[in-house]
Image (cartoon, rainbow, N blue to C red):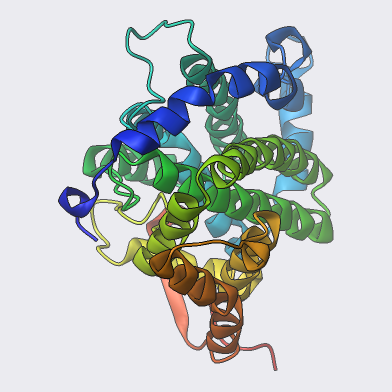
Length: 339
């Protein structure tokens, strides 16, 4: 779907404008006050202490327990988080919900900046964690971040706020699942601190998922025909993952390889993709919508059967061979089934 094919209507802009009071009422529960929020330094060795060498050494002992596949998905998740400037740029392009001055007091602008400030901690924390482990090639990782921000990000939503809400509802849930599952793998390996870190990040993502789903629920209430058409349009375009254009300067197939490792490790899978579709169809009560136009009714029918279609496709996914990553000094990660 080309962005120039996406036309934002005046009625959509009226709906988004009318939601400002609703957004304002909910900001206090969707965002946390800064003085009540965790910060990256809360979870890492304090280098100002006299015994910092001992604490870093203990930290590294625990981090050595992480297998290479967990390191790869952790790096990929961190790189994704570090490309935040690209995501805020896109969010502020969505018509009707941007930040016109950069410090505007409108509810949509306050949401955008609040969301960004909370998300900013995720990449900071994971980046510092990986640096302190001494187990990854940080220059390769940093080069990947540089390339990803340089390459940009196209979620196939153009500047359409409806499509934007659908995309973010889906993506925040996907990110929550990914971080939560990396934490589970870390705990299984005996690395409790990373388990705790991933749990805190997943908690933020869950709250952000709730926010975007709430915004889209309001759209469904105010404009059910437009909402269901946007939902179907976004699903037909398919959700483009934020890090799809990642590149380490050497490997043009890096994202596909990372995605395979994430699926094989059970961090984020084709089944998760299908489950998220089903969850959003249920969240927005798509099956129960009535009085729709003909085109919206067709979109409704398409959406109600979509999760099952993807579940069947997910069952066919197979893995084999191995993949090499510069992030871990060109070591190979096996994708073959455990015999």
